[in-house]
Structures are given as C-alpha cells and as structure tokens.
Amino acid sequence: MMSPECTNDFIEIARGVCEKAGSKLTETRQHMLEVLLDVSTPMSAYELTDHYNMLLACDIKTMSVYRVLDFLESIRLVHRLQSINKYIICNHTFGACEEHPPLFMICKSCQHIEEVEVDPEVIQALTHHANSADFSSVGSQIELYSLCIKCQSTFHKNLS
Amino acid sequence: MMSPECTNDFIEIARGVCEKAGSKLTETRQHMLEVLLDVSTPMSAYELTDHYNMLLACDIKTMSVYRVLDFLESIRLVHRLQSINKYIICNHTFGACEEHPPLFMICKSCQHIEEVEVDPEVIQALTHHANSADFSSVGSQIELYSLCIKCQSTFHKNLS
DNA sequence: TAAATTAATGATACATTATAACATCACACA
DNA sequence: TGTGTGATGTTATAATGTATCATTAATTTA
Image (cartoon, rainbow over all chains, first blue to last red; front, side, top):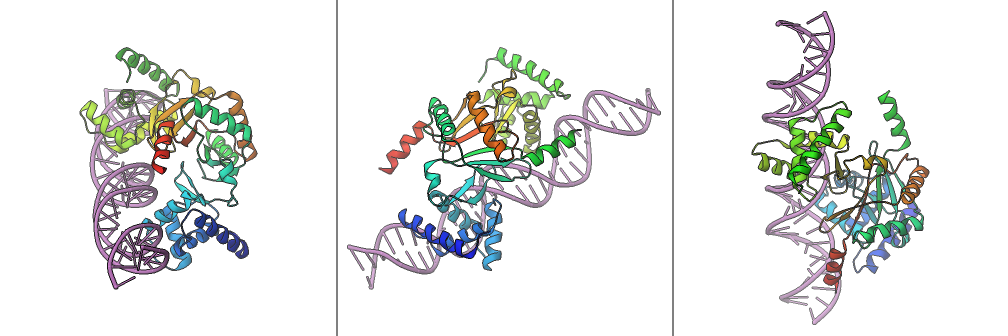
C-alpha cells in the first residue's frame, strides 16, 4: 500500500515510461497500476480482476487484465513471477531494473516474496554460466523457489 | 532417448532410490520413468499423459500422471521446471543433485533447455543472498528464464 | 487364515489459468 | 471525411491443476 502522494508520483513516472515506449498510459492501464500499488502481495490475473472490479466498481474481464498486464510487463512496470504466475508492481520504477536484474525469493509453501539486490559479481558469474550454455543473458529477473525460514521450521516440526 | 541397456540400469537405480525412501517403484512409476527417458524435451503433465498412453497403449488419466510425477519429484528422480510447468528426468540420478542444485537455462521463446553445472562459489553467494532475505536456501534447483542465442538473434532480426 | 490397515491407483467432477477470435471504439492524421 | 491503428469489449474455449470418493493391492496384526 502506498500513500496517495507517492501513488501520484508513481503514476506520473509510469506515464513517462509509457510515452518513452511510444504508447500511452490509458485509463485501464493507470487503474491497473493503482490496483497493483494497493495490494501488497503478488496476485494472479484472476485475483487482480477481482480487486480491480472491487476497487473501481466495474466489470473488467480477465482477458483485458491479461492484456494490460502483458503491456505493463513489456515496459517493465510490473514483474511477472514466472514460477507462480503472479504479478507485482516493479518497485524499481526509477529504472534500476534495466541495469541489473532483480532477484525474487519465493516461498514455495506460503508464497511470501522478498526482492533482493544481487551482487553484480554474482550476476556476472551467472551470465558466464548462461553464455556457456549458449544463452545470451540470465534474463530480466532471477527467481529462486525455496522455503522461507518460517515455513522451513514448520516443515521440520511436522516431520518430528 | 536412451539405449535399452542404459534404461535398464537407470530403472534399477531408480528402484533403489524408491526403496531407500521407503516406497516402491510400482509399475506405473517405472513406466513413467521409461516414458520420460524416451522423450528428449521437457513435457507437461498432459503431454506426458498422451505419450504414456501412446507408448503403452493404455488410458492413464492426468490425475494419475500428476500423482506419479509428484512422487518421482519428491524422491528427486525427476525435476519439475517451475517456470514452465514441465517435467524432465533427472540426469544426475547418481545422487549429484543432492549435493548441489542444478541450474536450468530455459529459453522463453523456444523452450530449449540446458542443464548447467554451477560453480559452488556462485551457489554460496546466492545462498548468502537468500539468507539475507530470511530464506534458508536457494532451493533444490535454479531456473533462469531467458533467450537462447538462436532465438535472441531471430528476435533482433524481427526488430530491424 | 481372516480381518484390519495402509499405500497406490482409478474415475469423475470441478476449479483455475490462459488464449483465440471477432466486434467495437477512439483517436491520429492524411 | 474517411481510413488506418492501437486499445478495449465480449464470448467462447483451450489448457492446466486439484478435490473427492471409490477401488484395488499389499502388509500387518489379531
């Protein structure tokens, strides 16, 4: 959840990103960003549909949601977490993601997410690995699918 | 695709892994391994269902396929590629995966997969990042979702 | 050996996620 | 003023994943 002023700042930055990409921040797209700013956890396209309709008292269809999310992802205003098929807003909207890919830690049990800044040397080493397999880069983001400490200890408890 | 002798060796090793885990390599499970050995690319549960039924001239349901795959994954005989929801047989069936997580490079365009051996120091660095975000480990495998060189160059061609 | 317990599988239905296809709208611009 | 293009609306359907309950097979235990 973001304060109204920050939301406005964000929207204006987003508008700039859109225009720089030769597109526009349409009403639907802006609303989707506001919805994404309003929620704290990653959400599926269907969950976002519900939230969008709840917040804006309308009846957007998932088809449109997918389209808007695809667009916002293409200009890097949102991240799509590939491992769990959910979306979150990019909290590096000031361009940082373009320089180095973010690392997302994803808990496979409770789906808690942490975004982590990665040591450039690690990126470099991974890029090297990627190159050795005939891939040009590590990709736009790195996702590690694991267990958060909380779930890890629950898991151990259940075993004993 | 694997030669018949290698397949037999593999199955015997797999049987051992099952029994070590306190379970059995049932007929269905063995057949699924044979199907996985027969195909070269990662496949979805539904594709595997079709292949299974084709190869064995039967009518297994996806529900059963999911169950068998879940089991085989739990004892680390198959990998589930989280990014694309597909399955491949573990080609480290001699226990290597338990020591260090494998890295899968996945092409987001053609879905070509390469498995890469990761420098232990990189794992260590990533584990450190994970820990700093209150995650206990990097997880059982690392997936990088990117573009292979071939698709990358096609992509560039299409832009110009 | 018979009954009871448990692991594995079969079968059906359903929930969730994603895309195809076509119609419409709105704006830019020749 | 028409015409092309990008964005959205609408409906249908494909693809993927899970819940539930019934059945079978093997193992244990009385």
